[in-house]
Image 1 (cartoon, one colour):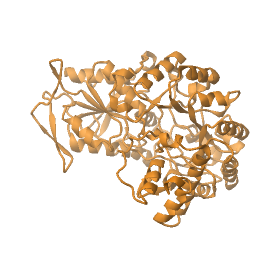
Image 2: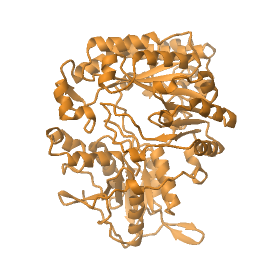
Image 3: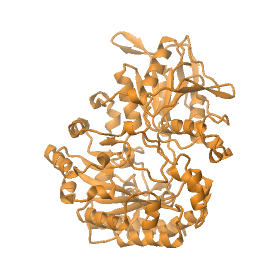
Image 4: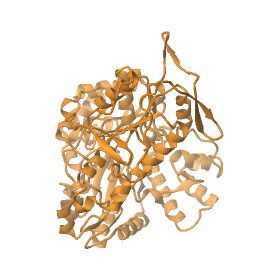
Length: 581
């Protein structure tokens, strides 16, 4: 399983069943009961059961400190489609499209799941994909009727052992003896933490609760794949299970035997990884229903920010050739995709050919709008008008702080003046900017945070065409990050773990209070709402878009003090959309 971006933050199953189980779903209790009637699909006269179900995500909450402060209406995030329905229906929200079915960035299926689905289909396995388990449990129940032998869990979006155990336990309530295989970045990080258990900061009780391989309330998983790129091992595991062969000697794996883990031989499987391109034509149409899809123009990151705990290997750093990238864009456009979210840590690893890429996208005229992370220094000498015409609708920029000393200590290799220059140019060109900040890194003070708040306020120009938005995260003292090491702890007087820490100038509680302070003091921009329907946003004029963001943020601040009245909400948004008032 590909170790794509991770966040900073057993009961043994029956491996080799001689019988195939099928399942009936008790609608009232959601419990799946096994019985012996084989329910199988017919493929050209050959009866095949489903080999595996892939789970890409399980609805884990964001670690952003500003996200919980955002506006909700009738228990729903105040995305533009919710707001428009509320105004149109005079304060009532009728049945909206199924969650995730609008053309929002949040509605994009997860790329880790798409990749695994395409890879295993290419190996001739019968596999199905669950994009978000807890949102799609009914679909999972239906898939269980097709006799799957295995559930595959990718941990790209799983942050802790508690989250993994919750997911595994829920699966076990419906299919108690199905084989569960887990891999991905959280598992690989857990293994590295287990290897470091002799160091004081890696032997604390909290780590045993949060990461696997610590023999402390472990999830009921049958096989872990411990690899930065374990697709080949996963494929071999599925083949062996189909043949009824043992899987206990697969390299780079672990199994819980009794109360301790059995680790297999470690090999360098990164050096023998194969390049795999997704066959978009072969994927099910459900993945393209929202018109939004994730892609990667590059893989990996060459930077070493002090707060980042992403595990990196230079052999996996790769820029996709532009012709291949354009071929993918054509393929997804042919499937009805209109929005592409490039998940690069830094678009094309910051290769300074953005004008060339923009012109190629314009020439291809695919009708696709797109978004990506970019570092500010990548945008030097860029033709911003050309970039906008290429379909670039929004850029994400990891600013972290507007204090030069904090940026230096973070090893960010950037400076606030460059951020201001680049963001103003982007907004002037009509390209939206979503900026990400971290409050509380060692050296942070009330003064440095004031500097960052003022930085945001100075960018809130109503005369520019693009919309500024932001998300603020509390500093997380994450295992495997450079700042977590003993030397850095001593340097900054830093102690603690994950969300509970302190250093010479601030502690975690103070940092969270500063996030609330920033949320309340920022006036003319608002936090990121990834659930906004992009089709609806694109119908707004630039000034209307900014007015909507500001009105939504003002209401969010009011809602933190008092319960908002229906007429109060309608009046505020009717001033943005007078034709609906």
